[in-house]
Length: 479
Ligand code: BG6
Image (tube, rainbow, N blue to C red; front, side, top):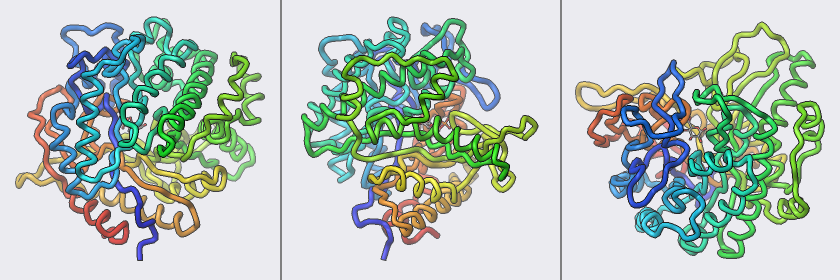
């Protein structure tokens, strides 16, 4: 007997800007990701403000899911997916974010994608905003730092709830909303582009704007949750947090307090607002000590209370360590790095691999919130090689995923209410942090390379059949 629920949602996850391509087709506008150049393992990508003629932009073609969606969804169905997490590109629906009427051709594309999923009995799980707000909103308002974005987002979200009512049961309002608590989230998550910023991974940071932007996103998310429930009482709307589980590097009480502080600000703050409907007590002191004054309008507190999410989702790739000592070796990580953990190995990109941290995290989260949880991103970004016989032997990926699923199993045995699991980049796609194709996550290989070359053909990796078996046995057979 499997420990996972009978209707456990096994599947995979992608985001529009990293897979769709077709960046200017059928009336689509320019999104934040469309002005980001390609980067590399060592070189940060750039934000160019305009589309430069001789510059390579990975999102413009990406893996061309826009024209390959049927073939791709059929492969997901072959693996037995119960759910497919994808995002809708805001700029396909409202090209500048400011139109009064939606772009019908954009909605029709997602009609087709959703119907294709449903024809294979795959539940769509849709992220409304995943690192791709209309770039026109950056130019006009400096992104979410302005309150105007709230109404524009809510109009967009209502358009989706109305159009896909009865077809889409699972929604997420913002991808990794808490990345806005970290400098990397300026442009990626908040569409904020401060003077002097061109380097994507090293942006000019004005914390006041970031936290104000986050407040606007909280209000927008809560209004969307409320509207979504009114439009379709059967739908479930969740939050999505980038989980940067942070351990104290040592048992020195200074390190313990430092780790607690980081967990509060980076991980718990946003979850608390979205699940409990109010700012947690510890933010008062943080704001005071960082000279941050978040402007709130009368009524905002009620809106937050009335728009609590139904379930909590998160991405989990790695864990970090915190210390007050200045001399410790550092390592990189998702959105942010930390002190190196001597007990863990890291991926080729320096992200520390920590399956047991997932069990720990699931218990921490369930203990805190007591609502259903879902792991909506997890996976290993790795270099893959096509062998002479055409196969891709990605045993390292199988090993990573297996160990994480084993720990999910432990967490379920511990009593955690876990709804599902959608590993990231179930098909190879463009990396969010570096713009590379070489950093591959998929069960399906796509012939597309960092310089933009490749015929876009798809082929199954060894992990494809492995994951198929995992789903078939509801997580029992992981060998
Ligand atoms: C998450 C994002 O942070 O991590 C995805 O939601 C992203 O968009 C994923 O792709 C993996 O990160 P990266 O930088 O390896 O693509």
